[in-house]
Picture 1 (cartoon, rainbow, N blue to C red):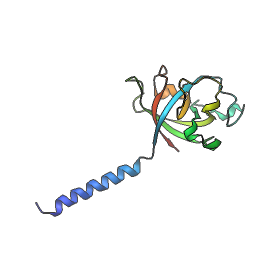
Picture 2 (spheres, helix red, strand yellow):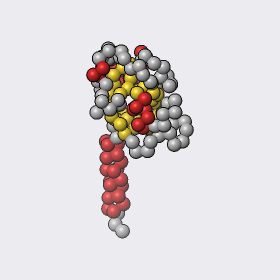
Picture 3 (tube, rainbow, N blue to C red):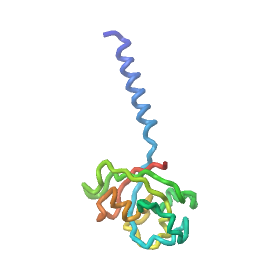
Picture 4 (cartoon, helix red, strand yellow):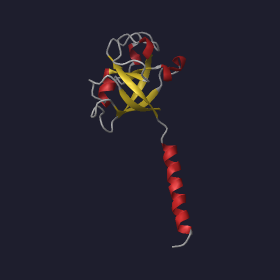
Length: 141
């Protein structure tokens, strides 16, 4: 075996690792859920057309609220873990729209100080709805 071959494998490994680092742009956070009523919201007031027909929406926590600039942003969200094994729906990613601020939602979230508070529909799409909170991976689209 020549000396060039080990260097070749090291170079390929480095290229692979660089590729992995560039393909993941998601953040990790936590999510709770909240029940209706959902109106009015901090973003769009009492306008019912703010909600996507899928009912996949959320209120932004302090970490992503950005003084209201997050209103209308859309995120890909998936459950990555929870306190209880089996809570997450495996390989399920949803796209949600930010319509409210978590600090001012009209109904009590299932947990406080989370990155996002998901609608009941959104939460139930990626996790067992009996969970208080979940750990999520999210990426703005």
